[in-house]
Length: 349
Image 1 (cartoon, rainbow, N blue to C red):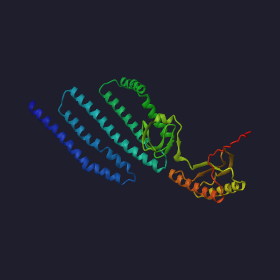
Image 2: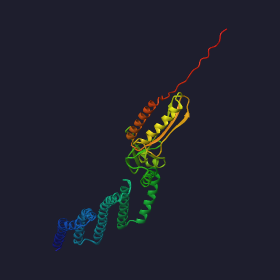
Image 3: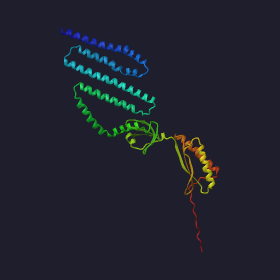
Image 4: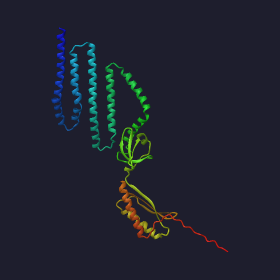
C-alpha cells in the first residue's frame, strides 16, 4: 500500500516536472514570440528590449515553480514543506533581481541616447555610475529580503552594514575622495575627453575619465593617471575651449632707424595684421613701446582665429615672414644684443 502510494507520488512528481518543461517550451516558442510581435509594432524599442531582458528569468521561473509544486505533491513533512517554500520565495527574489539588473542596463542605454538627442552635454562616466549605483541598491534590497525570509535579523544586518560601511569609508578615504572628485568633474565639466588641458603638474590631452582617475596623454606621448581628487583641487586651464590664440612679442630694431622708418613700419605692420585672414580683427596693437638697451622695441599684440596648434604655427610663421618683408621694404634692420666699448688713449710726456 505504502509502495503504491510512493509510486503514485513519484509519477505525479515527474509529471509536474515534465509539464513545467513543456510550459517553458510553450512560453519560449509561442507566448514570447507573440509578445515580441506586439512590441515590435510599437513606436519605441524600449518595450521589446524589456521583454528580452526578462526572457531568461521567466524561463527559469517555470522550472523553479515546477520543482516547488512537484515537491509539495510528495506530501513531505511540514518542516520540509516550509523549507521548500523558503527556497521558492528566495528564488523568486533572485529571479526578480536578475530581471531588474537587465532592465537597468537597458534603461541606462536609453537614457544616454535620449540625453544625446536633446543635445545635453554629459560625461560618459555619469550614466554608468548611476547604473552601477542602482545595481548596488538592488543587491542590498534582495539580500535583506532573503535574509528576512530565512529568519535573520534584518535590522542587525543593516546596522552591521552601516558600521562596516563606516570602517570601509575610513580605510578607503582616498579612494572615496577620488570617486567624489569624479562626480565633481562630471557635474562641473571643466574638460571633456579629447580636450587639451594644463595643470601646475602636467599638460596634455584627456583620453579617459574613470571613477578613480583621469587619463591624460602628454605631448611626449606618455600616459599619466591623475587622481580625480588632485584635479579637483588644482587650477585647470582648458586650452581647447579658448576662442582664439594669442601672438605677442617685442620687435627690436636698430637705434639708427629714423623716425619716419619706424612710423611707416608700424603703419604697414598694423595694416598687414588687419588684412590677414588668419588674424582676429578685434584686438590688434602695434606700437613703439620702449627704448631698450640695444634696440628700439615695437610692441606687437594680436590673436589668431584658429586655436589648433598646428594651424596657429602656420599663421604665426606667415605673419613673421610678412614682418620681415615690411622691414626690408623700409630699410629697417632687426637689432641684436651689442655693446660698444670706447678706449681712452692716455697722453704721454
